[in-house]
Image (cartoon, rainbow, N blue to C red; front, top):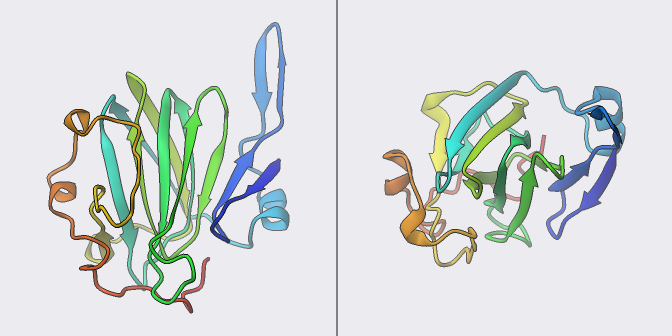
Amino acid sequence: MNIIETAIPGVKIIEPRVFGDARGYFYESFSEQEFREKVCDTTFVQDNQSMSCYGVLRGLHYQRAPHCQSKLVRCVKGRVLDVAVDIRQGSPTFGQHVAVELSAENHRQLFIPRGFAHGFAVLSDEAIFQYKCDNYYAPDCEGGVAWDDPALGIDWKLPAADVILSAKDTNRCTLAEAPADFDINTPLY
């Protein structure tokens, strides 16, 4: 796997080695040993999958302590714009984000550490999105930030009129209004 560092330390783009021929392709989507050597030492405990249509925007979500999560995400059908926002108070990159297109064609994955809000927008007619988490989901520890917070300056690559949100995501606060659930001392994994 090839690891691409991003502008925010800890957030990493992962490109697998893809072997293709007339039959199709093969690649190893995850190797615990190689992940530990090249990305970080964490144990994933839960795999999730969602299917969404064009315009669906899921995010920006996070889990508070003691159920903080880091995630390894990928799109196995279609394409999405995936976004990680640093929400660690005192971090030199607080409020900054990384946005990367993940698709069935490019096979890229994104590693999002703890202390980051995460979201994605579906750019294709349909997308199947998969992700690994290093902690179990706990509804009472769920948090979120408004996807359209102007201070974040995220270009979701969708017209605002096309965005489809859940009821929860229509009522999220801005990052400035959000509780300080993380700080610079928050362990990334």
